Image (tube, rainbow, N blue to C red; front, side):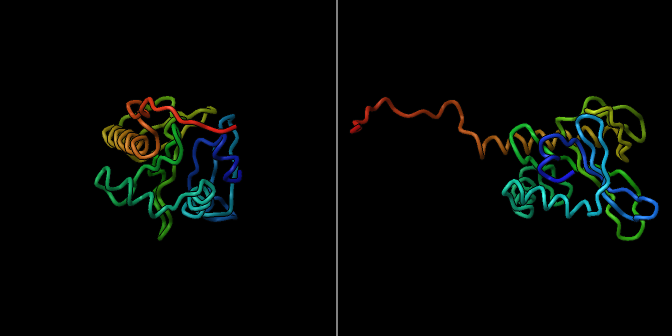
Length: 169
């Protein structure tokens, strides 16, 4: 699934060890599709942010300051479309341990020690977070979404004065 398709119908992209291929990326779609890509999670995230005209380093700095974190920062990339980082495996060597899930695609959360996220498209993702950790991550995502709205959307209370302009037609 290329990044354009993922933006329109993706719900998660996660690292995975595939036999015969090694460390790959698995993308999950809205309609139950699951595709394997030969790219790293970091590379796919960079492609996605570049497609949306954003700089990953700047996003992490800007929204990291809003929640006082430098790593594992939720990324609001569009209105009502936020990626949250979650640990999905125990890494071997220098493998990446976390993947990214679209916050708005989470339908429900189950579990006690290891949590299972139920996503749109009947996907179930096992994450290595406690319930308290997931609640913290979702709160941080709400804070960065609010910060995004303050930066990118004009508030309702900002209006022009009632001056009239003359135009020649």
